[in-house]
Amino acid sequence: MAERILEIRNLKKYYGKGESQVKALDGVSFDVYKGEMLVLLGNSGCGKSTLLNIIGGMDSPTEGEVLLNGEDITKYKDKELTRYRKEKIGFIFQFYNLLPDLTALENVRMSLLKKDEGHLSEKALEAVGLGANKGKQYPSQMSGGEQQRVSIARALVKGADIILCDEPTGALDDKTGRKILELLQEIVREKGQTLLIVTHTTPIADMANRVITLRNGKIEKERVNEHPLEAKDIVW
Ligand code: ADP
Ligand code: MG
Image (cartoon, rainbow, N blue to C red):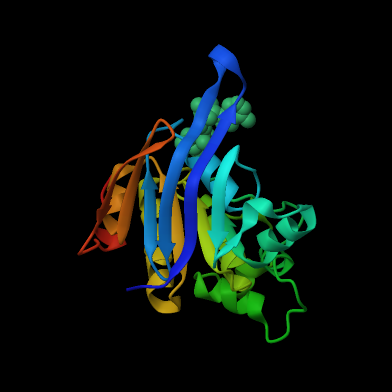
């Protein structure tokens, strides 16, 4: 049995009170195993981003626990939480979230906590298919697909325990999106990284090891893909 890396226990996030209260998450529990690609699937508004932001330490739950390697991050104070975000989590956003005034290379390097000895940032960019020349460019000079590659390199370079992806192909055309998925699949296979992807694009789930479907803040169903599809064969 694979090693459990993350445990989500009865997670709730409520907004507002009384009649207008929104239950963005309403008692969600699941585990994530080391080296798996887990897709969380669900329609817009079902609570995907809320869930990912809580796991990423960017938002706090109303109730419930998030244990990374057995430690409950919802109990963390600000300082511990900042450290957790920097050290333990790689986050890939729908709209890349690169800093516009930094080059691609600087964007990646920024996420490193220590001095970049051994050219880790260059290597991370190379690993996502961006050579030295691209590293000198600014985000505004790059295509959406290239910017997402930079954002993946930024998430990878620090050797985070788990990579969280919020609709990583949502802002890309189909062909570019598929290239990004191929890259993510390769990273799971070659580096043994743990990847949690949330998406509303159903076919993407076919490349995952496991799929959890969310609906109105609750888990509706869960399935294991015995034979995940190759990312390049996914059509949507
Ligand atoms: P998804 O990412 O699946 O589209 P979200 O997690 O963004 O869904 O949102 C889940 C629900 O919570 C939605 O109904 C949304 O309107 C609501 N919601 C999200 N953030 C807030 C907020 N800051 N204040 C109030 N309601 C929110
Ligand atoms: Mg969302």
